[in-house]
Every structure is written in structure tokens, then in C-alpha cells.
Image (cartoon, rainbow, N blue to C red):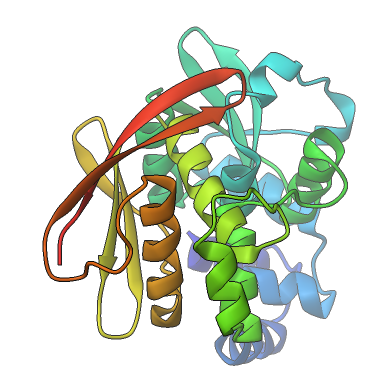
Length: 272
């Protein structure tokens, strides 16, 4: 669709062939779409691009500043999901969720939302900057802590764990400032919000794979660095009152956790 929009912009005289080529070069160097490059170069307004994409896709173009979104709709989509995928929940149409997205042809995101929310998805189109502004307005000006933000912090800053931090992971004291304790608590909370029946924490050579089983299907989350494995496992074992010194035998335990106003009883299985 990006190529179709670019060609129509050229045919309509909005941009020249040279400007289109410049946008293609910038897109390749920055890893963005040519249409996004056109906006970055200032050759086309983001609103015009979104309106053209909506027309091409057969969707409605939405002015996010002119509508009121019910809080009950906002609550149906976790903030981390809205920010990660740059989508804004707008309304319910029967059982379907109406969302604003900047690229209506992004079927991967649409299919993910359909699966995780367990609803049909109806698409309206808005510029990416307008969606991000709406997310800040409705969820809060700054991003609240989420699994995504914590994993990004661990990955980008190359945080490692000292002996003291490992000790914090291996204590039942709920020190909210201990990074590994916050991360494990956020993983559990997110899995509950996404209706997961299982959480899988699986070690690989260069990463730790985290997957949630939702409606019988395993959905992979972003992967923490491998260096977090020992701290993650130790924290989970301590919460489940499992012997952390035992590393060669399968172990079972239970964690009682509160998410929001509800209590959950989690069964834990550790396999060597």
C-alpha cells in the first residue's frame, strides 16, 4: 500500500520523482517506510498521508482531537499494548473493538489485537503522532511501567546483577525498587490481564523466552537478556517457597498473588 500511496502522490503532483527517490533512500537508511520518510522530510503532511491511506484501504479517517473516548473502552486495552503497537481504542461496535491505527494494512498488529482481545477489530486511520498524543492524553502523559518498558531498560542499559541484587531477588520482602521483583510482578499482572492460563519462562543460549498461553495458543513476549535468567528463576522460586539451591530435580510450588482487587493461586513447576 505504501507504494500505491507514493505513486498516487506523484501522479497527483504532490511530490516529484526526485523527492520520492530521496524518501526511499532515507527510508532504507532509517528502517522506516517511504511514506514516513516523506513526512520526516516535510514534503507531505502526516494528516494528508493518513487520509489517503484511509481512502485506499476503504476505512474512515478519524480526527482524534475531536472525539471523546469512554474510559470503559480505554480499560479494555492495556497501556503497554496500545503503546507497543501505536493503536488507540476508540469505541465498541457491538462486540467489535474500533481502533485508530496509522497503517490500516498492518495485518500483523490487527491480527494480534484480534487474538489478544478476543474481539473482531474495526479499523479507522489517524496519523501516528496523533495516536501517540491520544495515548498520552488517555493513559497518562508518560508511559507507566510495563513489561515492555522494563525489558527495554534491561536491554538498552545492559543492566547486570550484583550479589546484592541477587539477594534482593531471593527475598520475600516486597521491595518495589528491586528491578527483578518489579519485572516478575509485572509479568504476572500482564498475563492475568491478557487472560493467560500459563506463563512459560524458557532459557535459550542468548535469551530468555517468555510466552503466555492464551486460549490454548502460546503467544511470545519480548525476550529478556540471558543474563536475567538466574535472577528470574530465583525470584520465582522464592515466591513459590521452593528450595533455590536445588537445580537438578523437577520442583513444584505455589504462588499466591493479587492483581488489582483479585487474588490468584498460581501453580509453579521448575524443570532442570
